[in-house]
Image (tube, rainbow, N blue to C red; front, side):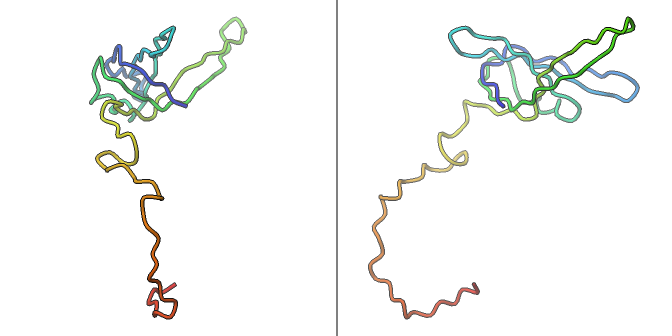
Length: 127
């Protein structure tokens, strides 16, 4: 799944517990009739992916939805959801087709068919 929008906020990396769990949050505002402010968290080594981004950039974030169950001390079961990012791309630099910096691919009918084929020519390909 993906979330697209404009970066509204990028938080600092936070470290939790004795094992050094790291988390960093980003808020993206969607561009639709009713814009939504979506908070996405990046964890562990993925926190560094946010280093090259800043407020105001248009981005596309690849996400996973995470859900977990927790039983509180009173024995009540609670459920929590989170949105976890694993890739982020800058949309302003994205090429419309193919790889960035590559020219667009011409349609197949832009090429003329080869008419000078000789089926008796030796083919030295190994397959």
